[in-house]
Length: 287
Image 1 (cartoon, one colour):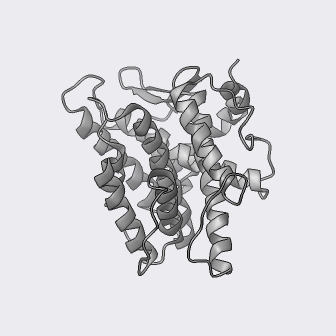
Image 2 (cartoon, rainbow, N blue to C red):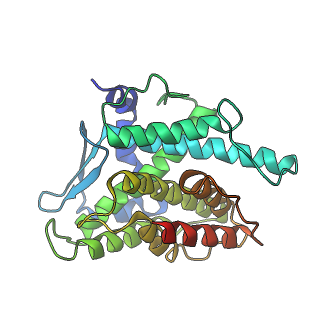
Image 3 (cartoon, rainbow, N blue to C red):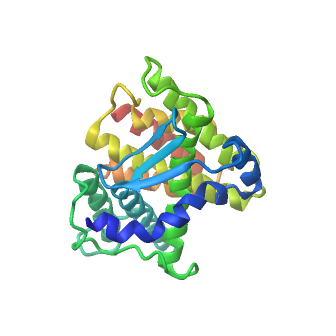
């Protein structure tokens, strides 16, 4: 048994529920999309990946995909705490050094990358381990909540391939990926009941795309998938009415910077939305 399977096996029941729980106001609608019976979601060994099989209406993911996504969610929460502390102490610049504040976030990012490269990567040196039984209000539980929300977007993206009747082999693979992204974003945000829910769901979608970005850094764009940075930019256009001072976008632009452009100073933006947009443009241009 790989470390990924050992650590993520306990999440599988919650993972299967996550597409319904991320937007509970649409749970009945989602079940109707599935024809009244939930589509099969299998988690198996193998390289970090999720895939839909339209002919048999099944979705398959891997333990390596789950653990690497959990690591990204945990890293995001660590960076979130670091930036909050910086703001409270009026720091305009944060330098992450080995063993210092924020170093766990970078270690988790690197562990996610290692797992994407090799699904048998040993988790023994990672700064923390997932605990599917963690109390919901604990730090571990809050990380799990963000992870499952991000995973729900990934699964809904695969659901979109099934719902939209996409083909497994076609010259329109890139177009299908963009359509699936747009469908999943719309599904999660279109009927969101409150600003608080919108912020959390937006952050979860951003976490998912940041994880996809790490996969892209390892494997690069292929004939089946467009560049992750461009997919993220396209998805952002479907986010809808995001507040100018969105906390989700503020966190996400710090994470984009830390993950994909860590060596240069972060420019000061007038607001969170502008900062995110500028960082996303830089990310897209650099890929």
